[in-house]
Structures are given as structure tokens and as C-alpha cells.
Image (cartoon, rainbow, N blue to C red; front, side, top):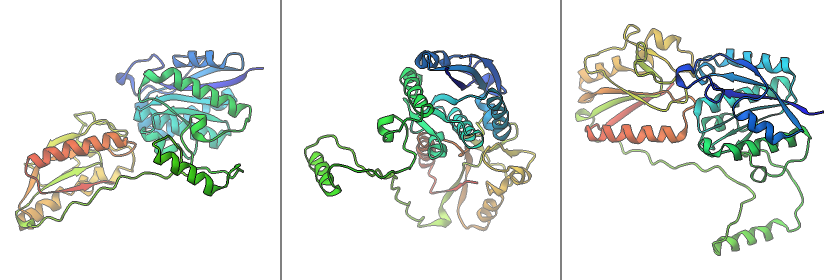
Length: 348
């Protein structure tokens, strides 16, 4: 008897449309849809995709608890043996949705789950310790390889077969380490790796460590009284109505707004659209996130020379490191060109 599989995909791969229908609510379609058809071929007779959950990326991101509950209800009713989501590649909101629903299915229903993402997808950082995330290319050009690895790993989990190291199985390291016996003791293996490194040969460490970029702090402003200061925020503060349609999470852009004629941010002219914190107080007084009122006071008192006339804003939650670095480079370049001496960067 074939294993039962439920597949989760977003509105685009579900054939519903693009960003214009990103608010598509969770719905069930019988059998495989979109990439699920290839998934079914890869499973062969061993497993059957009995249903496909389709949900808009925007809907899941903006109503995460509600969307999670709606999707869980569908999964629970279908009673699958395996749950698969995506692959999401480097799509931030899609990756967060895939990671979140897979983690919920594992934790609340006890059903093994697999998804696939590019290593820089924000969903990896959020969920890689909880679920199996197959490493994929950054775009759909790697679809077949991703589905092949996801199907293979899914079947292993179903059959309760022992798993090898993450790099051999093709998934992103979950931070779990197991003891096992080797023919050579550690000192000899370390010498072998050293000799391989000296010879320029490929080798793999047995104890991978995270790599963090070392960013040197900027030197202090020497003459604050004559300095120009800018305001930048990842707190999602935008003019009411969000005219540039910044995303509430997994941002792929930032916006720039003229604040030269303002002494205060009020709920009548600004709001928070951030999807990662309780926005209530930010929408009562946006200055709690972007302190324009206090900056104007300090400007009038002569603490610094002047405030830069533009506010730069984006949302930080779920935003990929690659996009965040790009925002920083582009905003930094503009501010440097404008003669800005210092920046107050507010978060949440």
C-alpha cells in the first residue's frame, strides 16, 4: 500500500497567479498540482500525493497564525504519512511559510515533513533546527534536483531508514551531532585533513562552525555640532496606505520618504506595516520606532547641525541576509553622496 503524501505550494506554483493574488487563502485540491506532478513521478508506486494545499505567500505572511491553523486543519483531515512543502528556493515569504507549516505539522501532528530552500532563504535561519530542509538552487532552474532530493529524503523518513550526515543526504545541517566509531583516531584524521589542505585538495571538516562576518564599527563622529544625521529603520514605518507596497516581511525593497517638512510622525500621516511585532503602539505614535520628534528637538538645540531630509525604511523580519546587505550598500552609498555624517538605525 502506497504512503499518503500532502504537498504545500504557493499561489504561483498552484497556478492561481502571481503577486496580484498573493492574498489567496488556503485551499485544497485533490491529487498533485504543479511541481507535485513531478514529485509524484519521483515517488513512483511507493507514495501517492493525495492532496495539494495552495496558499498565497502574502496571506501566510500577514496572517501567520490563522494560515497555520487553516493549513493544519486540512492536513489533519487528510491523515498523510508525509508532508512536503515547496521547494521555495530563495523566495523569502514562501520559505518562511514552508518552514512554519512544516514545523507545525511535525510538532503538532507528529508527521514527518520535508521542504527545500536556498541556504540564504530567511526560512533556513528560522526553521533549520526544527525540520529537514533540502538544499536547493536559488531559483526554479533547480526544480528537478530539488524535488528528487526531497522525494528521496521523504521516503527515507517514511521507511525509518538511518540517515547519514547532512551533506551526504542533501539537507541543511540541523545542529544535531551523533557519536560513532571511526577506523582512525581523531589525531590521525586531523593530520590527513591538514595534508589535504596543504596540497590544495578538497577536504571536509568533521566539526563545522558557523561563519560570521566581522564588521568593524564606524569611527565616532568627531564634530557632532556640525554633523548631518539621517534616520533609517527596519521597523516598517511608512506613510499611511503604504504607497510603495513594502512587504510586511521578507522584504525585497526599501523606500525613501521626504520628512523635511515634518516635526513629528503622527498616526494620521504614518503607520507601521511590519509583520514581526505588535504594531499597536507604533500606530498610536510612530515616533516610538522612528524618533523624528526627539531628533527635531535635538536639532533645534544645536546638538547636531541638521537632520537629513529623507527617511529610509524597510521591514526586517524574515528578510534575507543578501537583501539586507544590498539595502545597506545602496542606502549607505546615497547617504555618503549626500554628505551625511551619521545614521540612527532603529529596529523593533
